[in-house]
Each structure stands twice: as C-alpha cells, then as structure tokens.
Image 1 (cartoon, rainbow, N blue to C red):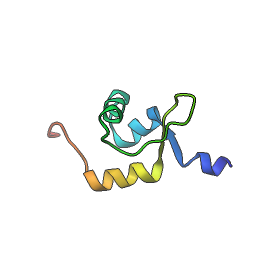
Image 2 (cartoon, helix red, strand yellow):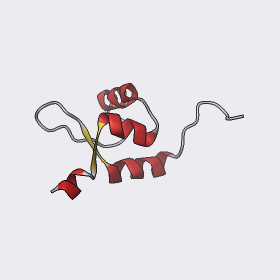
Image 3 (cartoon, one colour):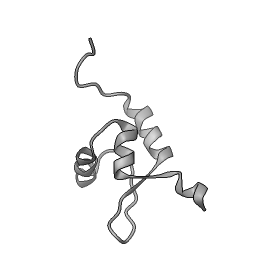
Length: 68
C-alpha cells in the first residue's frame, strides 16, 4: 500500500517535479491542459509520477530566459 502511494504526488510536489508553480498547475487544470490529474472526493488533487514524467518528455524543458 505504501509503495502505491509513492507513485502519486500532491499538487505542491507535482509542481516541484516539473519546475512549475502550484498556481500554474491549477490554471492548467481549469483550462484542460497540462499533465493528467486525479481528483477524488475531498478536493485534493493528485498526479501520477509516471504521467508527470511522460508529460515532461512530450513537452520538453521550457525555459523563460537564457542562463548566463
């Protein structure tokens, strides 16, 4: 059971995993874009690690400015 829970991230942990803000993930959910998520009864939102990794692979890294 504990091993299965390690495969799921909260919004906070998912945002860190893909290097985005929690607000960005919330906006994406409301627009129907971004990585897949699961929202069971109770209001908390979860993301599967496998889905986040697949989303990163498909969308590639997104940089907002060049590092110097």
